[in-house]
Length: 97
Image (cartoon, rainbow, N blue to C red; front, side, top):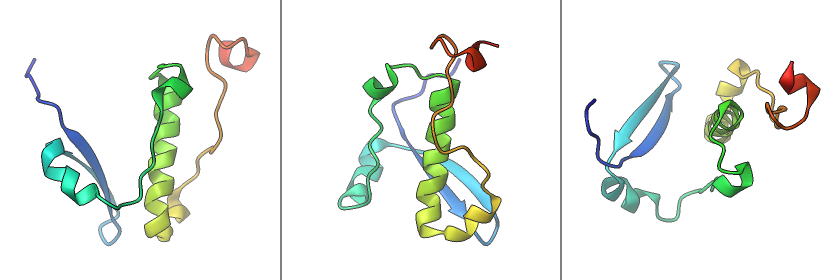
């Protein structure tokens, strides 16, 4: 497997082409561009450090909502559940079925 150095991920929505693109960029390259920009911290301890399907779903919803703040026309394509869904192992019967 190829070894990768640490990198930041930038998600871009090109409205005219209707395409989402993820870019891997060196953190030192992108850091100056982030100063004073809207920030949305995601604290892993709030998710009990569980980077599972529910975490990925909520991260994706958050990214789409953040994009929609600046490019609201993407909302017409969005059909997502904003709140948390039951997680397997949380004692919720829906998640354990």
